Amino acid sequence: MSKYLNFIAEKNQLRYLTITVFFLIFSFFWIYPLLWVLSASLKTDFEIWGGLGLIPDKLIWENFERAWFGANMGRYFFNTLIITIVSVVIVVITTGMFGYVIGRYSFPGKKILIGILIATIFIPQGYTIIPVFDLLTDLKVSKNLIGLTIATAGHTPVIYILLFAGYFSRIPVELEEAAKMDGAGFIRTFIMIMLPLTKPVVATVSILQVLHAWNDFLLPVVITLGNPDIRTLSVGVYAFKGEYFVDWSGMAAASVITILPIIILFLFMQKYFVEGVQGAVKG
Amino acid sequence: MNKKSLTQQMYEARWCYLFVLPCSILTGMFVLYPIGMSWYFSLLDWSGFTKDAKFIGLQNYAEAINDPFFWNAFYRSFIFMFGTVPVKIILGFIIAVFLNNQVLKLSPFFRTIIFMPVVTAIAIIGIVMTFIFSPFNGPANKFLMATNLTSGPIDFLGNPDTVLPTVMGVYVWKWLGITMMYWLAALQTVPQDVYDAAKIDGAQGYRLWIHIILPIVLPFAIVIILVEAVSALNVFPLIETMTAGGPFFSSEVMEVYIFRTAFVTDAGTMPRLGYACAAGVFWGVAVLFITALQGFWMRRTRRI
Figure 1 (cartoon, each protein chain N blue to C red):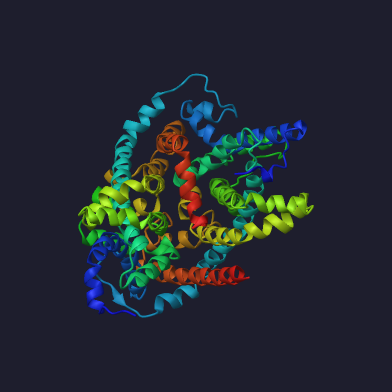
Figure 2 (figure 1 turned 135 degrees about the vertical axis):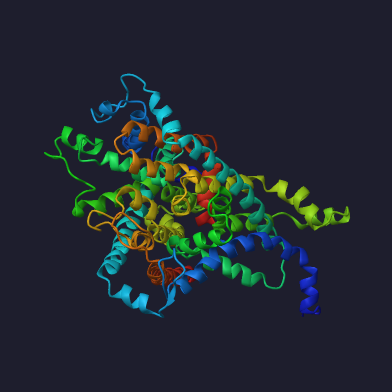
């Protein structure tokens, strides 16, 4: 980033201050709904609808207890965690392998493969969900976490492959040749030499997949329709709303359980989130 | 030029094929196969839960194009797109321009805040927003009444006139962080020397923006619009959790319509998988058509 767009000159104190104050107020309003649900999760039902203030009179931690045990959010939390972790591993391995050969080798049929991949970008999820459910039923995995996990991993955005392919294609050929001279085969070259070099892409793809798997809604809501035991957090909160619709504070606590882990992850690994998102327009 | 035969080439590339296999299988199973099957299902009269599927040709399509609910949902999806994409693009650009200033010490903090809704689960946003916009002491109404902007509570999500704009507003709020990040990436590609040269030539203020910076970021704008337009057509989780298409179907976009016809919902209708697939295929083709048009437009502008 360079200084060329700096129309806020440091010497113009007034303008600088105005812009900062404006963005501070803007930020507060922007983030208010999230702060509101956080504060509601620690209030009594009565207090939630009482005023606009965000500081609870007394912290009601029982709300979390009710959500975690009563509404089964504890179970859904671990379901979501398993689905997220396993699908990240699957996605990183499969798209990494795919991106590697697409980025570094040419072979008959490569163009067709790329063509099919690009075509899949533009297909809306809306109607493919039904056959996915059918497929999992046929494979007899629609009633457990395995089905939901592989389906989550299977809905891989093409962007992951493109990120890997782009990165792999920029690694100098000499490295590979040296490995070949040392007698390393195709797979060993990939695992020992190439993959370790792509750590930033692995991180970016992992983060994007965590975001996708943790927050996905349509797929889990359809798959778990007749099977509450394998619900994810998002589906759990949605069902909570239907079943205990008067327990506002419990629902707020359930919401916080769902969104807080990702927000914390985001705060610590912001760089990779941003790189992943920007990859879509830079590529 | 190719001395080797195709089989020879393929044999030499055997590792490549092995490496593309796992991802291809997954994509085949969960992306390509479902698309093919939904085309087939769309020709059946089938609830999706029983064995008695009956082949009825294009009857589902004929029924869909004669269903006013279908067309209402169809148009509503595009209202949603045309109502949100320009707002996101313009607002995202303005914010990015300000936050691209390194002089602004708090810029990283503001970016984090604006991006935060992006990482929160969309279904949770939908549910929390039903609280925020509740007519019974919801914070939005409280605020409006406390500041005397309205005299009585507004039933944002219960009134057919306000429900769609409200959902659209929430959508913009939820995803603006992404648009901002796109624009920041675009602005950061403007090279320093371009700017220096412009300064020497005496270009300043708005002229610098119009003649120098905008032409450089314009190719990005087209990609951003394309990406944003497609995502604005995929809003199922937000609408399903906020309104489920209600009240009186007034926020029912295409994906919610498909979901409603495919599965048993509160409306008490029978699930009709075949019909839902037909609606989905029709919708998929429409979206593809728009994407293709935009892709064409993008290529033309890039050539210039």
